Length: 250
Ligand code: NDP
Ligand code: 8X3
Image (cartoon, rainbow, N blue to C red):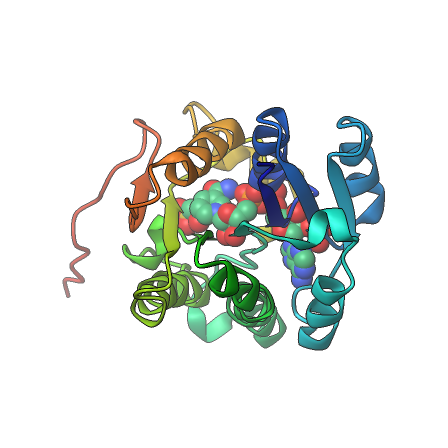
């Protein structure tokens, strides 16, 4: 039986690696994102196994239309990977650009629930399937400038757990994958509004997690026996850990 996987944010970083990981395993993959040229190039690698889908997850009606309009060979989805997401800005809350905050909320929270709502009925009808959500360590551990980004990932974490409650007895599994610093993606370039130099500084002198590492974790969670639900995977580079509480002294 061929597995069909729907991956959002497939034009870059983790999403592109997740697409490749499942396609290499013989799955059919719907690769969704806004940049169609990137998706077309990704699809070309896989001889018909990857279906490029230009989609802005923030648009709930467009998501519903795209899912219901999938070609028959890609419509019977088994696995949804809600990976599309972004951070915008790393400044303190009182100086933040409200447009950046709105974009994170619209993409990381609303976009994720749009895709989930559109695809869940297919999984529930089959009494099996898997929703993988990309959270972050930022959803659990606070850091300066993490403000709304971290809060959106806390939403992803709790939404994932709540989904498990709602899906109890359906056979549909839910996993939240929560990475720390991931390199070789556009994450920091997007966070710093296109400033590549500033983005590169984030990973200077340390070895981040690679997109292929995340793809492997996602694939592993999906590959567990059908009676096993991996609730959460939290993973960090060895070079990243925790700091002390900050104390302001006068
Ligand atoms: P990238 O910036 O490389 O990839 C983000 C992907 O999301 C792109 O494919 C982008 O495609 C897509 N995307 C953004 N907005 C939308 C939208 N409105 N509609 C559809 N697709 C969209 O970052 P990463 O691969 O690093 O990040 C992937 C996920 O992992 C994110 O959710 C991120 O928060 C999370 N994460 C990342 C970590 C890291 O350190 N890199 C660590 C922890 C979590 P396009 O612009 O073409 O639409
Ligand atoms: C991305 C990881 O540590 O930059 O979610 O917030 S971090």
